[in-house]
Length: 228
View (tube, rainbow, N blue to C red):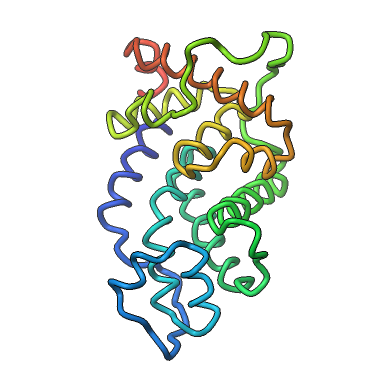
């Protein structure tokens, strides 16, 4: 039921969440929207810091869906994902002047979201989701012939409900790495830095996650029981 609710909410959310619930302070000096859309994240953040509220709106529109899907996939709870999503953007607005130029905006955004979710889990006695015992080092390194592109391998646009059910079967560390790569589109070295994990371990976790997800998604019966 969790997978079904979260997947359905993700679909409805992407269609209906047209504007941020956070009330942004309107500032003077807005730029032409067509110009903003072509700017990269760093340029948009600089514009926002100089009073351009529309620049922040473009950042929000660019990253909102991926961030929400990351949170929903990680915690398996649509309501909690929405709560942390809102807290993340509020936190980012309050600390927009503190972001370091050398840290990519996207990495910073997902770091805030991850920290907020971990804080919630700690507060409620749940340190890091459903973490299972799994030692990648005992199972060797990366699997041969595997791609590091989870979007290409798993076609996330198809059957999100089954994917969510399959994600809930992964060990917590593998699920987090997969979601940061798939929805956050973070590079492996960025994930390693964010999670304070060796790069080879991150690479191994991603590939084991892909292996298990391929198996679960190739067999509908493997996830049917989880999602009903």
